[in-house]
Image (cartoon, rainbow, N blue to C red; front, side, top):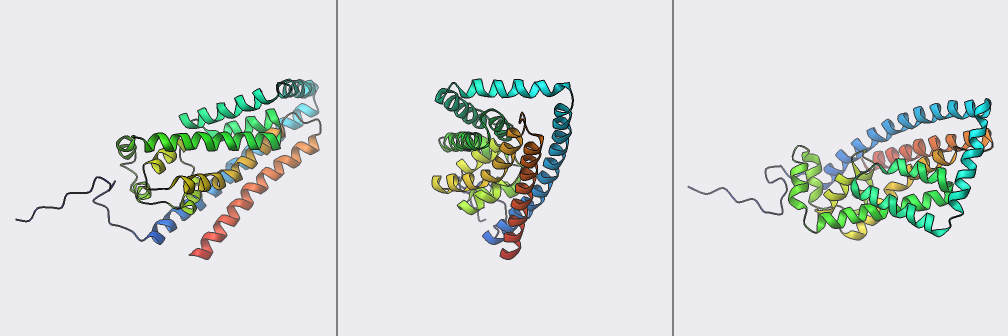
Length: 249
């Protein structure tokens, strides 16, 4: 009686029917489009609430709070490069441990302003993600594969992953630590991971840094303009993503 073939140790899901690479990307692309629309709605609600809070602080005695925020931001910036370096390393450590990075993007915009905050949060997020990627690659394969047993569509990513697919996966609102570890145990090259992660992080990074830097501005019109730009970035990014996916389909 012939024996059943022994599944390869490199196959994370030996019983799964292999899918064409195009079909896999279409599944990921469709889910990415849905989650972009969901994230856009969430950001609009956040911006609407923040607009109300900013209007309240500008037209009530709470306006003194704006001066306090500006003074606090100036004191942090006066510390020079140690403050910048320390914040970037804190973001890297937080992302490596699995904490939500977008909260730190908003904090970076609040503390350092849009330009510096965006660079610091993006650099720290990329460094922390790469650290998780390398730690998983060094020996966490079994633990990662056990974690995703109930997500077959994620298991297929372990086979191979181009920078384009890394970019698409970054648009899925899944825990960053899980994605970093999953890509780490896959056959994804480090340069593809870094390229796809950097490009995938940029849109929401820009949006949340704008939201953060809008707080504490002396001009309400300036704050509202930044909030509108944040919403526009997310909606434009989602529209371009969906357009590219439709063309590919």
